[in-house]
Amino acid sequence: MNFIRNLIHKADRSQIYVILLSCTGIGVFLYMNKWSYLSLSTDGWVMVYTMLGAALILDYFTFQIPPKGNQQSMDSSVYLACIFMFGGAFSLSVLLPVSLILLIKERNLTWWKHIVNFSIYTLMIAGASFIFEWTGGQPGEINGYNLLPYFAALAVYFIINTMTLGLFFHFSTKDALQQMKRAFVTESLLVYLCTLILALVLTILVVHNGVLGLILYLSLSILLSHAFKQLFVMYQSIEEKANTDQRTKLFNHSYFETMLENELSEARRLGTPLSLGLIDIDDFKKYNDRFGHLQGDSLLAFFGEFLIQRTENTTVTAFRYGGEEFTLLMPGMELDDAYTFMNKLRKQLNDTPFEGVEVFPHGCLSFSAGVAPYQVDMYNKSQLVDQADKALYYAKKQGKNNVHRHGINEGMEHEIDLVQDVRDIEQQLNLFRYKDIDTFKHSKRVYKYALDMSEILELDNAEKRLFVLGALIHDIGKLEIPWSILNKKDTLTCEEWETIKGHVTWGKKMVMTNERFNDLIPYIELHHERYDGQGYPYGLKGKEIPRLCRMLTVIDSFDAMTTERPYQKTKNLLEAINELRRCSGSQFDPELTEIFIGYIEKRNKQQPLF
Image 1 (tube, rainbow, N blue to C red):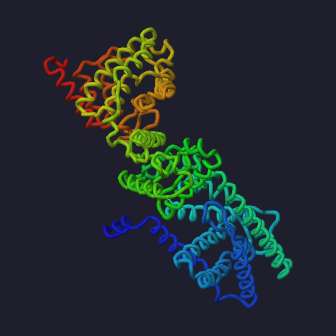
Image 2 (cartoon, helix red, strand yellow):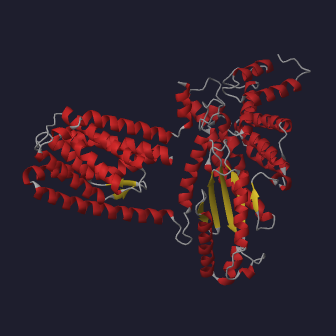
Image 3 (cartoon, one colour):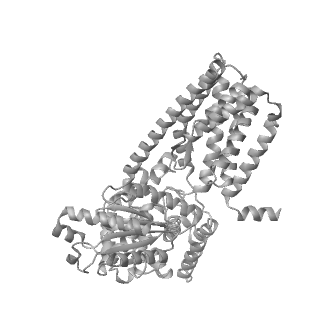
């Protein structure tokens, strides 16, 4: 058993899926077909050859539907018609020679893919045949008074195809299940409805008109296949235009947002690295003013082609972010690797000639860039973009033609006027003096705790600024809560608690009006998240919550417990410490909880805790 577990652990999930699918398909074929070839009459063999030829002709006229690589053909109508006329065993008798001929003909396709394809078709035919007979279907002429077996057979055929192919794409291409649902269910449904109609048409034509009916059926199927093929070409063209910036031929901003969301989800799920680069062409406005917008557009197109060539055959995807700004999404790259790649890109651009580069201060094409890594506590994609943007800003401050990594030496030159920031925030908090003086005092106390903890945690200047200002402003959203609820003496109702919980969202919206304090949003929005994932508003868990936000949760809760509130009993210091320890690992980060308790005990060692 241990050997099997180790084998499964080491094997790729897609490989395990392929092996299980193939074994199941071959087993079902052997059980259901039961070597029916031995019992076929001369007329039966003629019909096998006839249906075999029809299936091969329709297989030749394949067409694509989304997602990329999902090939479809009308040959399924042949197998369904065989079920309706002669039963499932006969349909499998047609499938086997078709699969063998395709194996010889398409030798460029890996052998195991032929087996997977054969297995999927076998399962679809077996399932459709079973449900056809189970719902009262009888092989032979179409029974127009009982169409349920035909629709039931198609439904099972479609469901098995959707499940087997959907899982295969999911394991092999790591597409999200939501994409699979859209691609296979929505896009394939029309094809399968046409397949059922064609299967019924084929059954009627062959039963009543023989070879002539088959010829008419093939003509109709080929025309439909061609129409679907043209439809997919049109779909591809529209999708490409929707996702591509026409000037640079790179993916556009909208597609970048979608891809960033997907890559962040993948990095979060698999624990793999992800880096983002943000690029700004240096002095592009100067070039535009000198040579005009048309030549400026030519420079953008040139730079777009440059990025396409340099990212080809890599995991890096380039996007036009807007204006002269571009982004590079780098899955699988650690920060240092991404920095090296971006720096190499910058040097290659410096050495690339272009008309009019003499107007640039460096005498060559150049860009400034910021690189930021994905971190497990990033709960919003905008955080990664903001960090890359800050690194870009720092790179431009250093004289441009430079690449900077987020978090490297930024704090050393970051001028922080903490006193002025505190003064500005306190002016907003002064509104609490008339509405809820307790919240005002609470914010000031939490701010003072944060000042002390920033020293204990040895935060740098930039981290200290964010932490203490975040602590000061964390409850700003309570300004939107009605006075009657904030000052209610009785226990709050469930509806009133929901109103109280809304303060994190309102606070975020209030702070977003001042770009200067946008960095404080996580402290406002996340200070009621819990370590066990049972908090609000997102239900983040463990290290998904930024470390200093976890620290703020401990501080905020401790002060709330030790301060008189109208809707709860006040705890003394010893009771509050015991409560922190009781909720350690569930509501609070255990490590940070002990650090804070140590600080409280040290601060009060000269005083009794009860």
